[in-house]
Image 1 (cartoon, rainbow, N blue to C red):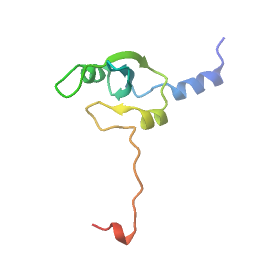
Image 2 (cartoon, one colour; image 1 turned 180 degrees about the vertical axis):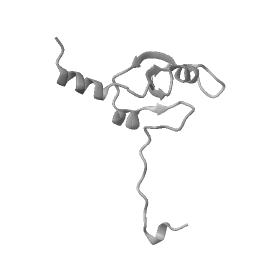
Image 3 (cartoon, rainbow, N blue to C red; image 1 turned 90 degrees about the vertical axis):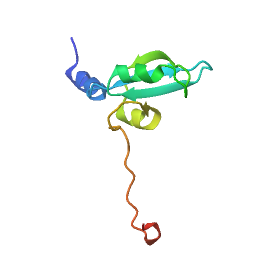
Image 4 (cartoon, rainbow, N blue to C red; image 1 turned 30 degrees about the vertical axis):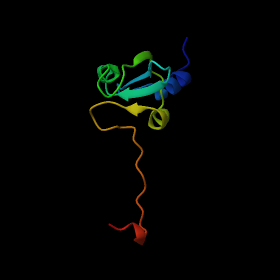
Length: 97
């Protein structure tokens, strides 16, 4: 028997948007936390190129909260990052354009 209250809590932290999250590692062992709108964009980012060595996907993450994505994950998708945090507007005279 499942607890309805616990099911509601778990559903609230699950990835409902369909975004993909992964932990990747480079050849020196550094970890990279990646997010995109689909797994294919993460896989494409991890392929080697002239500017970057190939990354190996260590694991796919499915229980990532939006706050953790905003703080620790790099958005590698093609759409605008839905987890970006906007900065407040400054009304000081010194910041006028």
